[in-house]
Amino acid sequence: MYLEALVSRLQTNDEEFTSIQEAYYRVQAGIAGELKMQRTLADYHFPGPYKIFYNFECVNEKGFSHQIDALIITTRFLLVVEVKQISGTLFYKPAFHEFARQTEEGIIENFPNPFDQAYRHQLFLSHLLSRWGIQLPVLYIVVNANIRTKLDSSLNGSPIIHLSGLPKFLEKLYENYDETTVVLDQLESELLAISCRLPVRRKIERYRIRNGVHCKKCDFQHVMSYHHGLWICPHCGVKSKEAIFLALHQYRVLIGDRITNRELRAFVGIDCKAVASKLLKRLNFEQFGKGRGVYYLIPEDVLERIR
Picture 1 (cartoon, rainbow, N blue to C red):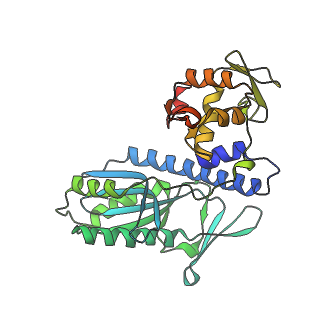
Picture 2 (cartoon, rainbow, N blue to C red):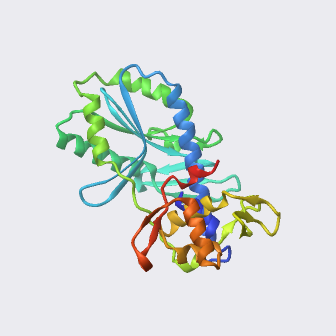
Picture 3 (cartoon, helix red, strand yellow):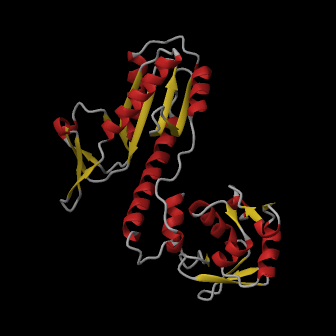
């Protein structure tokens, strides 16, 4: 969400634009892989009770974050699933904990080691279960969701499979691990109690963020003007009452959820204070403060106001 908004709002000549755009594409690929996994798990018939946490996020007792693509809990085992959507041919050097891929053009690139990532989550969860007095095996698997990816023989014996093999992998776990007395609802409650939305790690200075309500039809390249309740693109001529909602969503994500009349005018390009006041009244945002201290709260679901 943050990177998507940032790519739309950052100047294309910004020194970090290319790296941020590449990061956004990687995140999008990761999301596509996670959605494929969710469909695979939705189709799988679990032999017993289970719960799945997707995008499970929390902070450990030392203040370090954990972000798990999927956390499957059953009465036999707890499974950490790390999803990858990496293309090309994947290689691994266990002695060096080095994970790499070779592209179709023959370029070799190193990636963060997903086995070490998943193992870190495994250690953390094992520690938690022990603290909670819950005896349950904690396991992990790396799943590649790109069907065109080749797994080199150097990965033999490593905990990595193609997505299509996930159901079979789960069946083997059910065969190898016995039923326990764990109460699934209790474990779910414990995990929900520690889960939280992680804060954005990357922050961009305000001056680097482009102002304006941008035209979606023009791929956000042109700034729309406001006339009599409508946002009009000077390039393609499209008119919209709702373009403001996406702009304010991006403002909320990139800058903050509070906005004043002056800040709104500066961000969307309205010169008249009275016109901005009418717009804020029409938006019906919660208002706080008095006099010059008045500000408005942009709701988290502001995008849902688009019909």
